[in-house]
Amino acid sequence: MVTLCFDFGNTRLKYAVFNNREMLYEKVLHEASPQSIQELLQSVHPDKSILSSVIDHDKKIEALLAEQSSFHQLSNTTRLPFTAPVSKPETIGADRLAISAAAVEFFPGKHNLVIGLGTCITYNFINRQNQFLGGGISPGMEMRLKSLRDYTAKLPLVKADWNFPLIGYDTRTNITSGVILGMAKEIDGIIDAYSERYGNFNVLLTGGDSLYFAQLLKNKIFADPHLIYKGLYAISEYNN
Image (cartoon, helix red, strand yellow):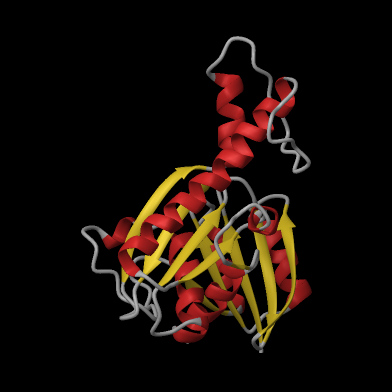
């Protein structure tokens, strides 16, 4: 059974193809148009499909997926392998639901803190009763880099460079050290705060830059850049 998992994020549009439980590959979509989706469907011929979207996408895409596969749109009405006893569960982002589902799939009955590194950093805590309790949201790396340019008179836009010194020696290295190392210390600090309250728990780090940040953290973590797709696959199976 072939399953097509879409992740429409604020920065990139991506999809992954699964053959049963095995993820075969991930690719980036250059545009979210009905034509591009139709071409993809003709190429992959999926049995099932699922869409996680945090943007205003063309609704014709959902119709195409429903016509040519067993389709599920991830939303607040989706059946999930966990509960969300928070004040407004309908406001939880689809991406956060997906990575939380992956945590429950891999570590059921455990405390799990899932940290998503995307446009924003999201902290998502699921307790051992498989309840999503919430977490936190802060600016992601690209947002921090762009804000330094946008909200100052003279600082430039700097591209992320993982080969940076602790003590910056020019504008570029001052910014990369401040932003990237600052994020790493923020993440470690949040993990420490959860540890003081909950003791032992799993920390799952995901997103395109997760493998880089994993090397900068002092805390023990499980890094998987494809966690959102694995969560989407699990949700697709749970709803079919």
